[in-house]
Image (tube, rainbow, N blue to C red; front, side, top):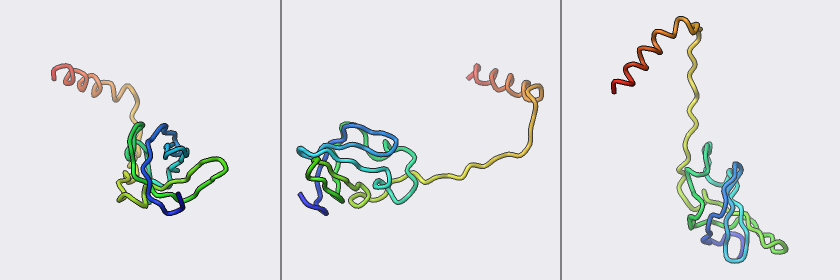
Length: 111
């Protein structure tokens, strides 16, 4: 194996910062930044544990049998774009909201 090679690996674990993959007898990491050029909300939007995925080697640590891998260099970006939240300025007390909540709850029960 060398840097730039295309390999297949099996996803063994997913954490907030990346996914761990086994490629032959090497342990690999796909850092969250290597999934997409866009904001990545959840790595599970790209891979799940047990998936066999095509990846590109971007770094090799022969002494520790570890690889740094890229998903985005092989696959078209499927990232979920971040949406800017909208906020409503204002405040209503619970007393003011209670009749609306009760009415919504009644409608929900009837459906």
